[in-house]
Structures are given as structure tokens and as C-alpha cells.
Image (cartoon, helix red, strand yellow):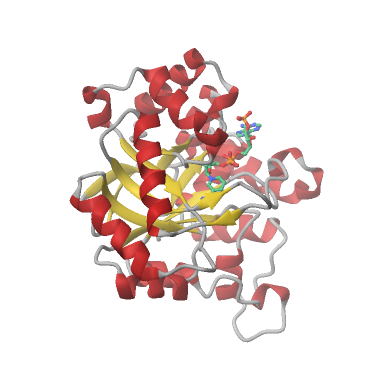
Amino acid sequence: MKNISIAHSGLQTSNIILGCMRINALSLKEIDTLVYTALDQGINIFDHADIYGDGTCESMFSQAIGMNADLRDKMIIQSKCSIRKTGSGFYDQSKEYILASVDGILKRLQTDYLDILLLHRPDALVEPEEVAEAFEILNSSGKVRHFGVSNYNPLQIELLKKYINYPLIINQLQFSVVHTPMIDEGMAVNMFLDQSVDRTGHILDYCRLNEITIQAWSPFQKGFFEGPFFLDSKYAALHQALEKFGKQHGLDIPGAAVAWITRHPANIQVVLGTTKPERLIAGCRGSEVPMTREEWYGIYHAAGNRIP
Ligand SMILES: NC(=O)c1ccc[n+]([C@@H]2O[C@H](COP(=O)([O-])OP(=O)(O)OC[C@H]3O[C@@H](n4cnc5c(N)ncnc54)[C@H](OP(=O)(O)O)[C@@H]3O)[C@@H](O)[C@H]2O)c1
């Protein structure tokens, strides 16, 4: 397992994160096994959100492992807020909602503090002064140590930065070998290709420039939660390319897909959401395997992208 430093935080973390979005499908015993498998592999960072399982993922997590001070010290725990599910669903970054949400998260996780709080999705009605006030209260009361965002573009981050007195250290974004808009737009600059369309505001370069660590969510899902790409024959060429690379390094296809992400010099963390310990181990193995430039570009090409 490779470790990385998260800039502006002093945090040293594994480049694999255990994503806890679906752990409520498991028994408490199975969650305990999954979390200890993660710790045994060297994973020290765990990703939650207040909406995962409507809060049950957080409460089952702490219940399953019997949260205590010793365990808590070994973990970097992050959670997210701002998505509300009532009605058609909406985003809420009001001061009151952020504060109430964090209190709920801490209670469910049976902890006094979060290492990192992420704003889950940009709120079209955001009033950044309110976010700043909420962050001030959360940090000065010891409830949240660091802050970040998820699914943000550069200007949305700049708007927050104008008001917030803390560095935004993380941007969690969907990224995988089959979801590469932030690579595509940089690869086909000034051309009339679909790939040239600027869908992220060049978020990859922005994060590198500003030392914001990117965390890749859904590293295997095609589309928006349409299932793992390696179960879809549409990606036959990609399967072949990953299989070839994997065979040389003792990796399965998902493990090779992890290696493709961690090859990027931006030190991107991979949020693995599997609920199966053996799949978690296979993914971790991929995270430390080196990949040549030629292999990396070859896999990108096999995923259906042009290299102009
Ligand atoms: N910030 C955001 O907006 C956002 C959005 C979505 C997710 N997330 C985070 O990202 C994490 C990962 O998301 P995810 O679970 O959608 O993505 P994922 O890690 O790509 O997993 C997707 C699916 O692949 C399956 N899978 C994994 N390894 C497999 C293998 N070797 N063979 C067959 N199937 C395999 C998993 O099922 P099994 O459990 O059966 O292995 C899962 O259903 C979440 O837990 C959450 O923490 C963040």
C-alpha cells in the first residue's frame, strides 16, 4: 500500500480509501471483517456520508467495530453533508443544516470529531459566508479538523475560498478508466472532438496547482451507477488491455484498473466501495503496481478514447 501526504493538513494516508456507501447491506460481523481487512491492508481512511443508507452506514460502522479511542486514533474518518433527500431532493449548505448534519454524523459514528468534512455536492443556492461561519464553529469546537468538497469545479472552489479561512484539502470526483472527462479535455485541447468539451473547468490541473488531493469515487462503475465496466462486453478491448497488464503483475482486471488511477502523478486516492474483503485486497494490490507511460496510454485508448 502506498501512502501519500495530504497537503495543508499534515495527514498521512493510504492511497486507497474504504468507501462505506453500501455497508448497510452487510451484517455487523461482515462490516467488522471488512474494516479489519482494510486496516490489515494498510488502509487508514474511511469514507462516509450522512445520506449513505440514510445514516445507517455510519451507525452500523461504529457499532460493528465497537468504536473506541484506540481504534479511532488509527483511523482518518471523513464524511459528507449537503444532500437532502426530501421531495425531489435538494442541496443544502445553510449554516444550520451543516451544523445539524455534523452533529448527527458524530453521534452515529460514536466519535467526538471528524478528520475531514466534505461538502457532498455544490449547492446552487450557496451563501459562502454561511458555509464559512459553519466551518469556523465546527473547527473551533473541535468537531471537524479539515474541510474539503466533492463534485466541485474550480470556480465553485474559488468562490468558497474567498470566504473560508481553512484550506479545502480534498475534491472527491467520479474518476475511473471509463470515466475520464478531466483527462479527456486536457488531451484534446482546441479540437472539435467530443473529448475536447470542457466538462470540469480543468479541475485536474486546478487541483494540482492548488495542492488539493483528488479522491476517485466509483472507480469501477460505468455511467452514473450503472454497474462495473468489467461485467459489460461493450468494454471488451479494455478488458483485454487490463487483463494483459494484470497478468504481468498478478492482478485481476479491477486491480489493474486501480493501478491505472494510481499511476497518475497527481497522487489520486481511490475510494473502493466493494463490500467483499477479497475484492478489497485485490484492489489494494493494484494500488502499488507501477505502470509505464505506454501502458497507461494504451489502456486509456482501449477504453475508447482517441489519442490525437
Ligand atoms: N462523492 C460522491 O458523490 C460519491 C458518489 C458515489 C460514491 N462515492 C464513494 O465512492 C465509493 C465507491 O463507490 P461505488 O461502490 O459506487 O464504486 P466501486 O468501488 O466502483 O464499486 C462498484 C461496484 O463494483 C462491484 N465490484 C467491486 N469489485 C468487484 C469485483 N472484483 N468483481 C465484481 N464486482 C466488483 C461492487 O460490488 P461488491 O460490493 O459486490 O464488490 C460495486 O457494486 C462509495 O462507497 C462512496 O464512499 C462518493
